[in-house]
Length: 244
Image (tube, rainbow, N blue to C red; front, side, top):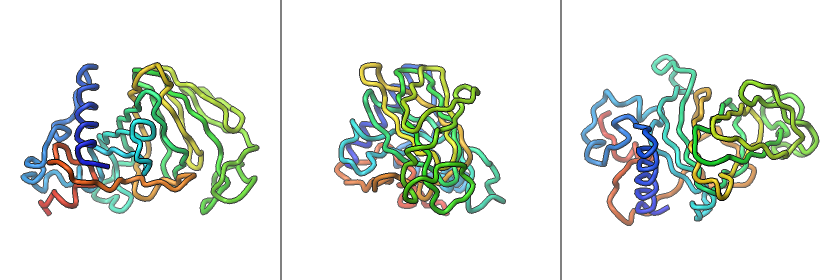
């Protein structure tokens, strides 16, 4: 993705949130200078991948296939002594008609909450287990594929819901859904209803290793530096944050 596009996408996200009275922590607004001057007291932000994350999943078509994320807090798989938080919180912006590709998580369990804007259309399948053995059902087919037969068990606003594989679920503003480990899920902002502001509350996670996409994608985009950086993404931290 081009840096100019990333800058624009994050600018638009900030504008979207400000118009809805949704302030972000100070580091959300930092530019390159602030990051280069940041001291070691900010290392939790860097080590736990807090802040901005924009991806087109390798599609080259962000407007139709993509996601804008801001991570407020997160634990750490690799250093639980230093970072003992077992939870994470994210804001996810989904454009009108924008799609998140099918994937599941080996480790993360999450609640997705529609906090306002448009409607969110989801589809879910159990997966045929690969290298984990504690997901019930979902054993028809090749490892890693959709289980086309077993029902999907989820929670919507605390209510247990059982739906056939691949069924459509629509989350209206204010509604939430639980996604368990090993459950394939995709979503789309329902066209014509406007952008969707989601929040994700989950166990701590690492987006570098905990996403199993059904089709091969590029989760962390390579960046073409065609203009100056206005906003860093978490993938930029190792290059520009030097306090260590």
